Image 1: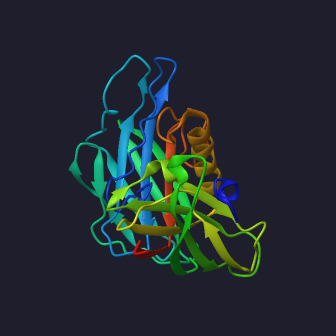
Image 2 (image 1 turned 90 degrees about the horizontal axis):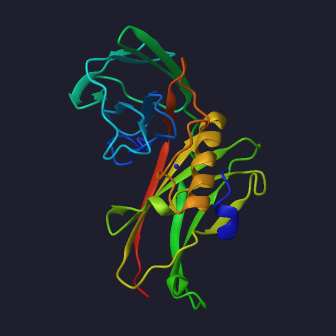
Length: 265
């Protein structure tokens, strides 16, 4: 699998066990919509949901958070968790623990209007290893140690993934990668992650298993990245969403596999 393939969508909170990936939705009209960002994982909680409002092109600054909402996350096993607001627009679980194979439901009530969403958490294939291969390139930005990620896709088509990449502890949003298993179903993958590092750099890769609706949402953001240079610069209002009642954004559930490695040669 090469760089071009990796940028096909096969993953905050939104790797959002913290609010590291905040999407500033921008509309070309004065219309205001609710934006929902949330992710439940199989990693230890708590988990967060962020509610905000869209802003227009002439507005500056981060999208304003929505305060005083009722936010509830539940699962198909009977757990119901009323989230606590911990900062502007950010609501946090109090007891929920994500588990692969469960379906998670979001209910948010904002100014008397109710919004709902649901997401299934698929099991994730573990990352086997991270390796580095030095490559010379005509483009100086691609001259260096290219990371390769190795994993085996389970047999049976219909597996979808999203990657988070951290370089020296910093999330690299421009390296957002999503992919499916159409071309390598059931096979062992050796994927060039499509960027270069230097000796001493530390890489952390997080693999998120996502369901098909989440795959379609992240596909739209990667297309945005490829056309404008960044996935979160101007996300279109008509991007796929699983939020009801006219809201945008995404509430998802993902099992996660992570691995770290340092470039030593």
